[in-house]
Length: 224
Image (cartoon, rainbow, N blue to C red; front, side):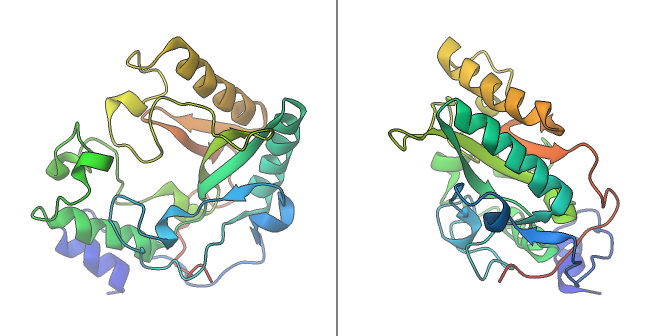
């Protein structure tokens, strides 16, 4: 059994499909397609819900399939006309990173990051409530997490919650945020939807290309 599948098994979660360890030519470095995006790759560092660098992230780079990257370039071009830029937190995610999440979730004694990342949800419920997935769409290569920033000031638009806050407050439709914060979420969602992405109902930052080229294939090549 591969390490990623073994970790999911140990965590008592459904086994992921066998993940491909090759990187198809259809995957591209997003920085070559959207060069003026800001890449804040959270799982390469320790500012994330695990509290450490996540397995599979050996470089602060983002990969997407070519169709997703091209669609994102169109998003960036439209955003730029409104004085906005893209801050990207995560793109393709290796299956081994998902396995790392599973190991972390299984260790209920480790709650160091609870106050920052999941204050409203018990750690034992993160998978059941859909904040973490045993199989991540990110591992198919056409899903990404991002925010908008003001190109004039460099400040992120206020979305009401930070990235990766596992809480009903992070749901795009949440009424626990201000009208202005919800408008910023709607602005991001509108940009993404107009260029072929589908939002996720529990995370304002999460989008998947509707016509993703690998809808049933998961990958496990490292980000390097």
